[in-house]
Amino acid sequence: MTILAIKETEAFFKVLDESSELLKEALATSYLDAFIESGDNLIDGHVQVEDGRPDETVVQQLRGLYDSVDLNEMNSETVRQGIQLAMLKAMREDDIQGNHQLTPDSIGMVMGYIVIRLVEKQNHLSILDPAVGTANLLTTIMNQLKDATHEQVTAIGIDNDDSLLSVADISTTLQKAAVTLMHQDALGELQIPEADLVVSDLPIGYYPLDEKVTNFKTHAQSGHSFVHHLLLEQAMRYVKPGGYGVFLVPSQLFSTTESKGLLSWLQEAAYLQGLLALPKDLFTAEQSAKSILLLQRHGKDVKQADKVMIGEFPSFKDQAAFSKFIAELVDWELNDLLKR
Image 1 (tube, rainbow, N blue to C red):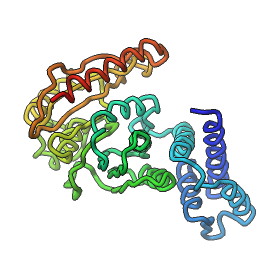
Image 2: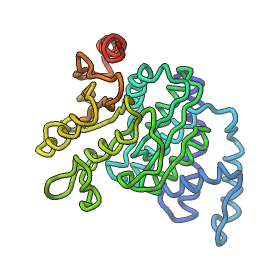
Image 3: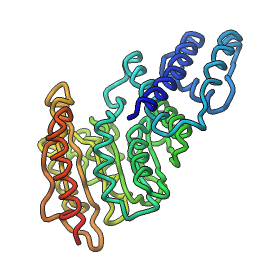
């Protein structure tokens, strides 16, 4: 990232942050809700006033901030990273729960790097994220794909949290990203076309509506089912035959007592082509460690890779070791996974 790009991102974040702080105080609301209000103002081109709030003094301050931004001159990554900084502040100030945390840029970039070669022959690419959240991971990958000369990248993002989806709407609108956002339970029946690719940072935990998922092969035999198991199965239903799913999952995904149903479904529906553990130093505790899971839906002319890519990334801080691992990963993609 260039010095100029860093300055542009910091300047955009300052506008987002100062306007959100003004609205937080004026409307007596949370930082996240104030950010959503500010983002809507920025998109609409005027300050929304209701029942005399915010008052005229704050309105003038907000207009001054918004007028300092030229959205047409900002690139997508400047917008995304500025919003990401605001969301990191919201996470701290509002004490937002773990499943709503942002996917770190370092992880998003690695996931995007893996994806690029999988879809490089597709000029028109459709993506699904069934747990889109603020769309930070989705737009990180979309921006990388656009930089890799894909002519058209469209996406569908689904989430049942209206606040996070409001942030996603602001982010994708300001980035001019071709993303359709849907506010619904991703484990319900989805009225969407099959996608070329699925990417997602899956939420971790139990799904409370047992009767709703009895038709899922990954549902628990007793008690609540793991929502990340169910979402893996659901996501791969909506990717085209032969299409890939790239997911951020718990590193202990296949080590729990509930993994038997997951493995049984996997044998019928998709090939496990890769499982790459992320560096341990990214996580505060071993049980919170995550891995990148690469699945490929069964289809014509699709087969299990001769060598499944199982490994662990070296620390991102060790540039030499990291570069070596990436080179091995690229070699595996080109000469094993994609070899026909």
